[in-house]
Figure 1: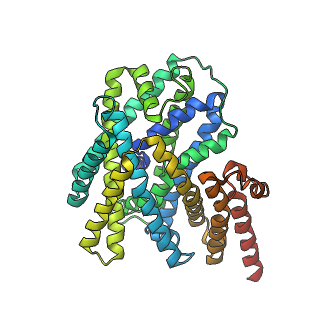
Figure 2: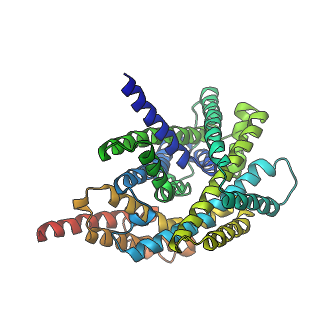
Length: 428
């Protein structure tokens, strides 16, 4: 009985750590507006959103469990040069977009409603504090993170529960032509698949330190159970916020911003005091996320330059300057700017995650190279379409299945995966 309780505790502790890893406060602003626009097809949008914001990130953790390495190991089978370029690109995107977005969310949720100050001032103060914590590597943030996440979760479940039991299940018609794919693409904006690749190794290291005598299979089972438990929790919250947004479709104007909608839903369900409290908690959680991103980026670059402290300091400064520059813009603008980068890097990330979890006999170096190259090629039309060339590419997209859904890479990558494996089998 004691062993069962101990094993259950290990699963719960690891699941909470995984949940905290993915549960970025900035992500909370995405599902409510998605639900508000999804209408009667909120469930289909929720499935699409959770496919890219929950299922793929959890698979990324499974891949880490198998690799027992870092982000560099994800693309190593393609080539070391590709893996290095991919890693640098991921970190560049991380400090340029999701990190500044945390400052923008903080300004819109916790500063703008109470103080008449410009977003640039918020961004400057915010990333000056981020820099101080990155340089000092304070453990205070880890303690705060353990307290903030449960508090935010409690408030969110109260909001979701209140909405579900207070509103009639009557919905408007959806504004989306392709609800499922819209959900998938909005899920890209959580950056959680990238998060799984970047910092998933931290969870693996933590498990190795706690369970030094455990076998590979025992650790793998622990990660698998914890991963699905964390994924179920994320699914419940994301789906709950989407249905909440759908239920309250008539309460807000059609052009309301993501942050204003989350605040408005909080106020209407729990009152103004709860909304104020949620704003503070979300802001603090955003801050811990920004510190983690800048620190992780600086650590990676430092490692590539023979543990140079000067390189660490320079990277931290550049990361915070980028944060100030981008963080002064509103959340909607940052999300719009992020889309082209995500349309290119997310398919590659998804493919690398999937290739690293399939059996090794199905993921040879040839398979890695062929599938990744195919994904890159067929992601280009989606990328170009996201920066304003959709009409010019309409003829080309007509020949690429799912391209009209911005998922033109999916079937070609799957087909090449199958073909290369068949050819490999015939040659052996």
